[in-house]
Image (cartoon, rainbow, N blue to C red; front, side, top):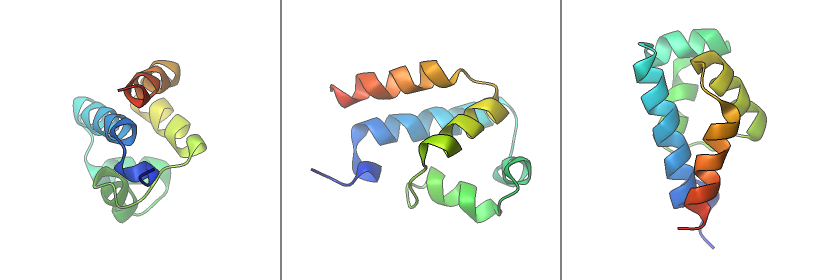
Length: 81
């Protein structure tokens, strides 16, 4: 089994987070400030160099004003592909 950052489901998650950040009109730096993290934190997860944990995903969803449940459902569907 491939590492979780190299699965289709993880790619779906990251793509949705990146698209949501861009739709919100936020730069990586602006999102990083909201998270109280360095810009490199955002860059690394967006480049799939770092895996996000569940709590980080929920926090990102809240900041980006997206439904965390719908986000998880899209990941769940991608697991079955």
